[in-house]
Length: 369
Image (cartoon, rainbow, N blue to C red; front, side, top):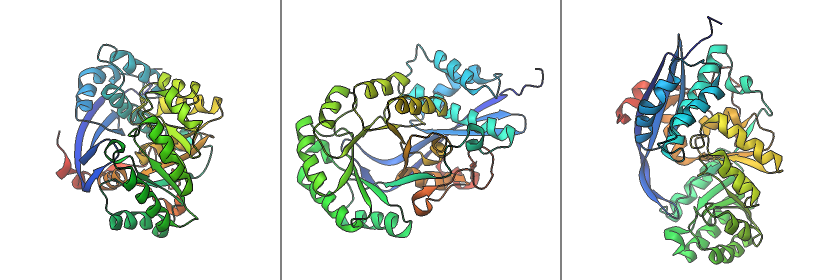
């Protein structure tokens, strides 16, 4: 058809936002967060997508993806996603290239929904009206007072009934402090809220099993990456020996990675990050893989990039309301959602696409590329 809309232009921008305090998890520390924005232009419509990645992701888009995407059918997002994946073959798909593809893929879905005048959740087809979220932060750099304020903010002010803190401080070398912080978190939130922990792969296998006993005593129900998910067999062996549910998958950049975790029986709930795994196109396929094995999926970080897609899968557990990314998305975008009572309602206002627009003036001071 001659009137089939095509992508006319692809642009990028990079924004770096300082954290509001020094942050660290079990294996890494940081003091800023970088968002790489991709936009696709089709007539009067601009689609918006992004990833949390180094600025190199923008260069991958410019050097390897722009020519592939420009001129492609704007409505055929899976076709363009496959073309982008083939274009990065020699560069290597896992890592920054997958993140670059993710930003463009999200922008393409946003653009398609805007062309059709629909919220993205309605274009994809909703499986639910509300998307449950959990408050996530509790960095190992926090003292007791800061951790308490954050937890109370989620549970008491926003009525979020599930929260997560980081443990395995300094690669598991401060185990007693981990235990004390978990106990303190439970005391702060009470018995009604769910308590999750994330070790970011910082423990040794036997150490993770030992720590899990203390976690179970505090009613912890979610033990994220007790060891690295790069070792599915080890993760599966730990899962068989601990009481809290084991979750992992946030560092999955390809669909086979998720299949390997699921086939090994390594997780009770699969995590996938739409800004890392190749975008909404691949995230939905990961959700289907999990559903085929009777496993739920949880969206990792980047809540506004996930929300519409998350509402379309029947096996959704929840979405991570991550402190850093919530701050960044509230700063850089208008049209953000609120976790009222612990849930998001994407598409409720009828805004097309993801419902986001770049807040150009607010974002300007943070643009670095």
